[in-house]
Image 1 (cartoon, one colour):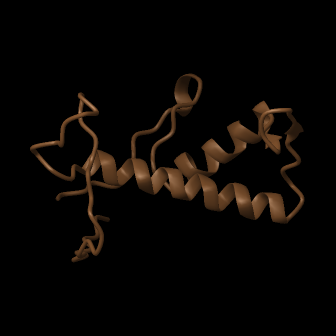
Image 2 (tube, rainbow, N blue to C red):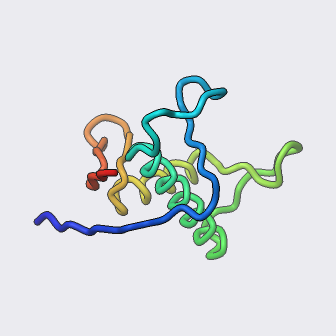
Length: 105
């Protein structure tokens, strides 16, 4: 079953999106891939924070940062964001799945 959700947003701050040349502004503007990338990033951050608060993620101590996620933690977060939330998952072999969402800008 396909459902459509239309969201109208307005940017209230200057927005300079990336391009192949970081010193130039993207002439095309905001792309669906950029929105999905931000969506995935915030989903991973939210899930990792929730799992950490629940005591599920421990992390490894490091001299450079407060805690570094373990390989198992990274796999768990990636699976939850990609497979459970449907934002796309690159697993090993048959588990890979494209995003279940299509964005039009």
